[in-house]
Length: 110
Image (cartoon, rainbow, N blue to C red; front, side, top):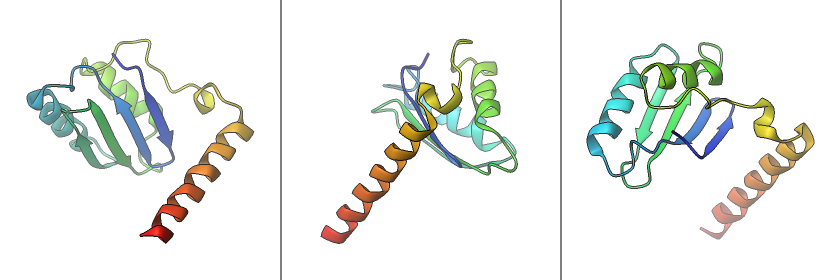
């Protein structure tokens, strides 16, 4: 089950309830995803339940990653990557620009 999904090309952060509070589940999802073609890196955090997945968009899609997680029982069948996460393209672009601007400002302060 998940209640949070954030995706950008090549990067997906998803909250997986089963991972929160379970080092074993975090290791299991990490091992499972790392064995998949196109997945470059996985970091599952048992404290937050967040799983960060870095992947090659030419080798695997966001949809396929969710299917893999569903097949392994980490997500229910209703989890999907909606087109632009239910946002319009303009809204999604504005959010990405804001995130980039904020990251630049933080880096300038450091």
